[in-house]
Structure formats: structure tokens, C-alpha cells
Length: 259
Image (cartoon, rainbow, N blue to C red; front, side):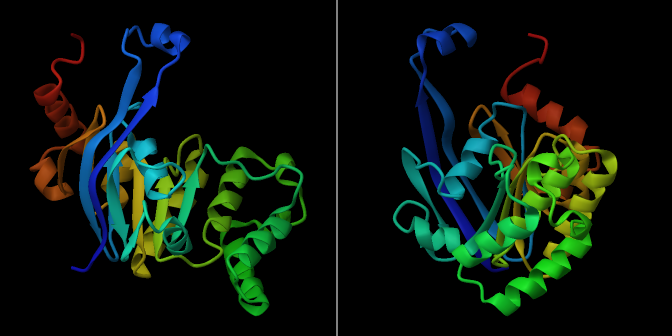
């Protein structure tokens, strides 16, 4: 298989304020969010980062999307370095996270055109791509409604569509179904599988076992900023449900959950 992403020893730390130290019940002034994390993703596969909240998944994806710089390590995405060639990386990826919000005042129609033009997409392609994506997600009926007046599920659909305006080869989604109703979550999940069928490489982070089982070819389990295991679902599960294996691995690496 063709390697499309090589992540090598990513590390990221954050300074803690006195208030944050109190909330986290620690005297440490620095929090290690990601600690020497490495993995590889291949062309045309769905790779999942699985772990509890605070494990470092979102920080990892934000580094891969060049929103924040690693303190150490690097990642090479289709030949481009996230450290030394961030603009080249951004041209190759679509990135979706609930932390990034679309402007409430503008309509889906306006924002699709705006971001398409930022990526240099030609007008004919903009219209063709917008028509297909808006119809697929039912956005066409709300194309001229301000984003601030849309439902949570529709906002997520619009955000997803706009992250794909330039038809990227690599799609990075942080908790793609988080907070969605079951119907909207299914629409998003089915679309991710369609992207995979088109040969796209998809990197997702989640704490939802069923999502990993449904869409991922391989999975990396992240605990306390470290990659504790990374393999195919078949090899990790060894005939057991993913949830059971996750907790077995967690207790092997960390200890009993109730300790």
C-alpha cells in the first residue's frame, strides 16, 4: 500500500495557568498533551485515533492540519512537511472539527463560494461541486438561510461540505459524529465510507467504538498522549468486541479504571 502520511514523534506541551493547575489537581506547570506519537496512514484507507477525552487526539489532528506547531517531531503528508511546508499541506487536506465554527451571519451558499475561491477553484467546478454536495446532504433547501439559524445537525453538514470544497485527497475529521442525532450521524458516516471508496485517505478521531468498527481499516489507541497500540481492527480485537479490547489494553497500560 502507498504511504500517504507518516507521523514521526509528534510532541506538544502547553503551559498551565494557576487556575488550570488547580482544576487538574497538579503542581506541574506544563501539560504534555502529545508525547512522541507516531503512525502511518495509507492511500485509500480510514485510520482512526481512539481514546478517552483528553488523550491528545484533537491536539494531534490540529498539528496535522497545521493549526498548531509541534514542539518536536514532524509529519509528512503526501511529501509535504507540517513543520516546514504548512501551506502546501493545507492545500492537500480537508479539516473538520467542532471547535472551528462557520460565521453565523452568512449563508451556506455564500460560504461555499467564498472558501472555494480561496482555494482557487474555478467557477464552473464550484457550481457543479456545490450542487452535488448540497443535494447529497439536503443543504439545497437551506442554501440561503443564515448558518446561525440552522439546526445543529445542518450546521455540521454545512461544515463538512465546506471542508471539502477543494476536493482534497486527505480528509481529517475530529469527532465527526459528536453531538449529532442518529440520522445525521448515519448520513455523515455513510459519506465517509463513500469518500474511502473514491480513494480518499481519511483520518478520524473519536471515542465512539461503533464508529471505529464501522468505518476504520486500522486504529491507533491513544492514552495520555501516547500511541499504545496501532494495528488493523482484526489484529487489535483478536475476535473480541473493540470496546472489550480497549479496556483490556487500558488496564494493561494504565491500571484498573476504578483505581
